[in-house]
Length: 251
Image (cartoon, rainbow, N blue to C red; front, side):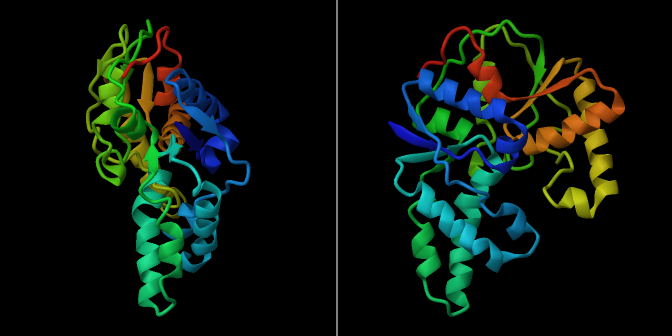
């Protein structure tokens, strides 16, 4: 199976190890992974800030770059949700404004075959075993979109539970947002910081050494809060945990 890795701006710029982990993990599972060099931002930041029309060229470009692949895999639930949920909405809004159905038709090929990583692992590849990783205790907070965007909420903990030697503990208040929310953290910085502090406090109460999530945008916010508070916990993307196992995950 040939898939394209949609790494996203945040990972490409700040967390390249997550991209390497995704490639390592998928390759071990027999997937041929391409990285289209022409990929750019999906437009989520623009769209969420109210610049819908300015987002449309980015969405068209996304479709042009990724349209030929069997599947598009991203280690970001929020960017995956942008394509799966908000691209169709943009197309319909353009049609309602009398600009025809050109945008909707252009985006239609990529919408159903864009997958967040854990969704692809569980639903497409049928991964059930997480391999063996004699790591310290971890706690997993489903990101804000974990139970909504992409509908992937149960998949990350399911994959982590399947990793032998990894102790997974529940995170109090797991359904509460960490406070990042893209531009929300910029527009409402005091509220965002308070939410991040609450999230870190809940994570530290578990006694775990590692905080795992499936989106580095959330982990960036949480990790920054941990640094400011002097926390000893480490934020780690789930791809890096699964890729570091001694035995490959199995379908």
